[in-house]
Image (cartoon, rainbow over all chains, first blue to last red; front, side, top):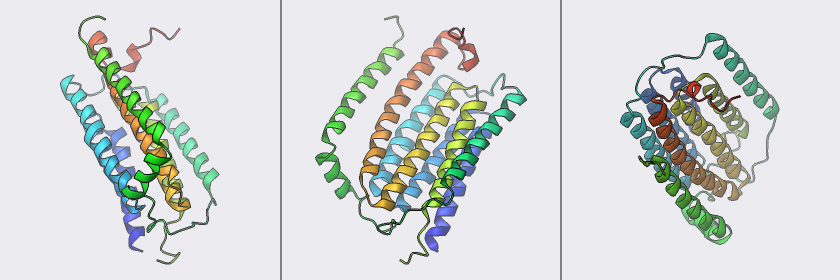
Length: 166
Length: 105
């Protein structure tokens, strides 16, 4: 029962801060609420015994991506209210569309169940040792190619961020 | 641990669908380009969590490797996206996406 309580607590925390991310007017509050959501999702990974993913998630998302967002908000001095928010009817239509998407997804997945081969809370596949073996054995070429992707992204970001015209 | 205490996969499906829908609503209702990028991150994260949950429930590590690669691509995407946002701000002095309608028609 204890894992159920943790699951519900983390889910409610994640959903609450995701909604607050949309409800807050200032971008910096959105960034902080999104960080809270990411920490709740990291807790979900721990609950699934995916320790490697939990650590990578905290490092990459909370540590790198959110800091990047914060830097952008603060360096550009963007922490102002939205000057011209979208009209009300657009928001209402967006809520109806999103709510219908959610209902459709839940309706599709209703009654879906898989017979778990092993208890997911004690499964060993999420440990660094097992994932590392698979990553460096079966998925070596995609892993190396991702470094090329990062190099390309870095060159692109530097090119885009340069002051003078290229 | 008995089967009763295990969280059903159904819970993860509902939770991740809700989180994904919140991300979609965020993309639709916001005008700030940064907040739209953050909503996209939220959607990516809900997919990641669902992949990891299925991977744990079917005892197949390929799903968690996939999550790792999705995180790699998301990090690259955010770096490029924020560079583009900075560039937009430098040229238009705003990150309101409604300013960016030159390519619309």
